[in-house]
Image (cartoon, rainbow, N blue to C red; front, side, top):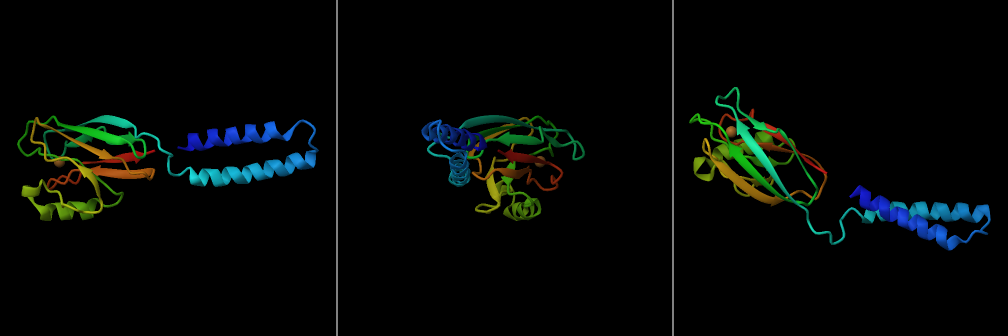
Length: 181
Ligand SMILES: [Cu+2]
């Protein structure tokens, strides 16, 4: 997104210089430049929302690994997606131990405790997902050992750091970072 703003600014500069003619006195050039810079600043602000760009589609593979509570983890524990992209995450539970049941829940940063507690209340019949929780961006269903579950969602428009967690009871050690760029 930054790149778009910069290239538009560059076009702007070229246009401003092209129209100025070679003969303009230095003071005029100076004022034109200042004006251009101001326009650039305004431009960047309005560029926050991408103009009718088609959303990018991204597919990511995520593994849940480990056979014990001590080993269990996401691989990788850091995912990166473009802001506003259409994201598909394939969660593959590689475990064979019975207790290794996992989901992946993408949440607002810092919301792990709240979402985990609410998930516990939601219970197994809801895959430990509290329906309608505003801290949840997206989630898969529970994946039994050896199973895979997918989820497709729109990445947040706001760039920044988000999290993903497993809401299966006792699995708070399973977490990762979702970086939205
Ligand atoms: Cu888990």
